Image (cartoon, rainbow, N blue to C red; front, side, top):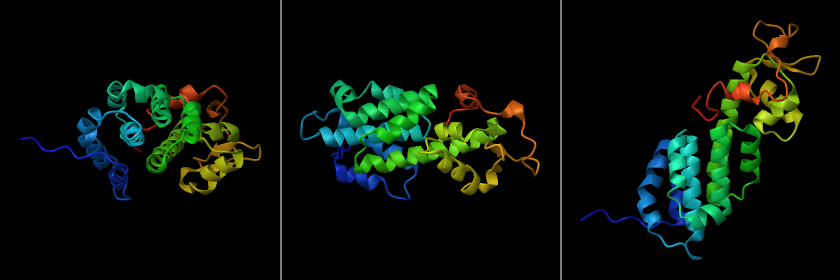
Length: 218
């Protein structure tokens, strides 16, 4: 006889999101539950649980940078949920933004999605990983960037917060604010020599994205 599939519940899903849980262990736990989810009838008594389960599953696959499997999962989700559930729709849009490296769409979706209590915890981890990776890519791609463009890349609410994140919260990255109001990458011990060829301009998101998947490990 095969192993009995565990029932899916919000309390069980919440128990997976312990502070010590790694993305890999979380993914394994969710994968174990997929056979149960696939045979669960979608109705008013199961919608919230299934919504949370599939949203967590998609976001976890994004977190471990397994985008092909995340796309494959969307073909296994009940179409009623995929097309009508707000949280699953938001998770799918996040996946689309990651796949196309659309930074603006990523942040707009992440910050405007109706994440539930459980899914919101994981969404926060996805957002934090994205910003950590973006900070690294910014330092690789540019020697100078306007605060307003850094704000867009990082999904920060205002320019001052973007400057604070780059300059004060990540001092080891070498960014400082020049007299001209640009964020300048200090690689030679000074900020006076701003390299014009490294200055970021509007519309150069593709240049940054081209350096690598923006949710890859750092």
